[in-house]
Amino acid sequence: MRVYLPATFGMLASLEEHRLIHARNGWAFAATEALHEFFTSGDEEEIEAVAFDDAALASIRLLAIGDEERHPHRRVVISADVPDAEATADPEMGESVVKLAGPVKLEDVAAIHVDIAEAEEATARAIEVVDAADLGDEDAELTVGDAQDNYMAFYDPSELPVLVELL
Image 1 (tube, one colour):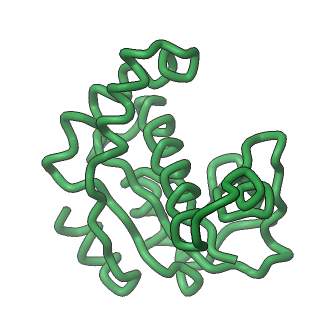
Image 2: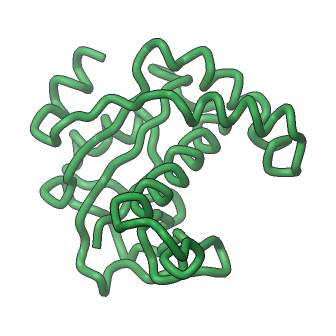
Image 3: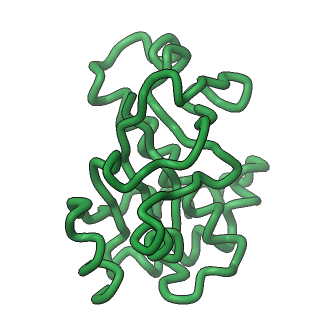
């Protein structure tokens, strides 16, 4: 199963160092059966894009904690392939939410996605209002949506050392 782990740049550095990553509280996102049922139309790629976007939003929430030192305004999503038995859907938490049985190994990472520099300003604004957006504030929802609309650069897992060192 392809899963999308919300992350931060600090978590990428840990992935490089330890060759595995622990999803925050074990949660990730995927194109689950519940997500397929929720979207009655759309192909697999479109439904996976919804799960990816959910992970990107969760990355904003991770950044809102405020302990990211190096790149506090860049979303990170890690795409990985795990055995189906390692990811249990939890539709009560959200249609795309899965609970991972354990950490994800670097060799299971399919891609790393990181906000480009031009997206940092919008992400910074989204971090400030993400809680208000969750509570239904329409202006805050638009601000978070602006950040979500930004492009995230794609990196092959083999580029992780260079990404951590140079970015």
